[in-house]
View 1 (cartoon, rainbow, N blue to C red):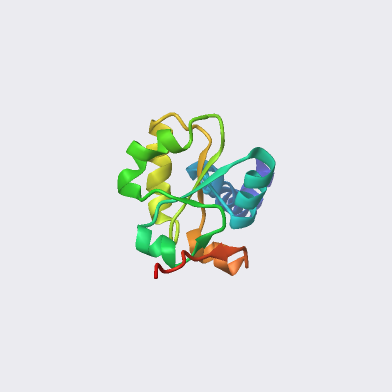
View 2 (tube, helix red, strand yellow):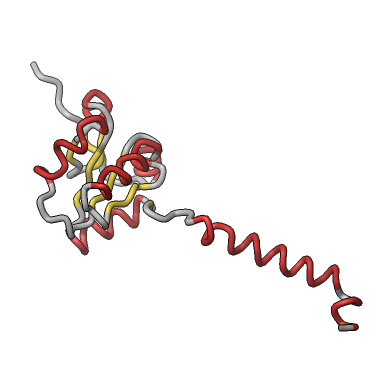
Length: 139
């Protein structure tokens, strides 16, 4: 007891720093989202399906190679026809990650338990220098 009384400040500091380290885990930070490099690994190793939930104009301006475009508003109707195997990882991407998080909730509601958002969306994909393609303009 004397040790606790003599070192209360150090104990408080240790508990505070431990709490700060544990906070992201406790609040579920990163749950349902992964880095652009992590997405590439899932695509290559587990046959993950990359779905871009941006609008068609945004998608045409530049998207991850191999991504399929399903705007967020149409996700619940089109995803079951596009990804029939609900056991496959479904990776959802948008411009910055905000719409993709909403898309994860919609996909999980449809039964895609391995749905994850690509953290940072196309912004992080571009920053990681991963391959991007553009839809050619129609002549």
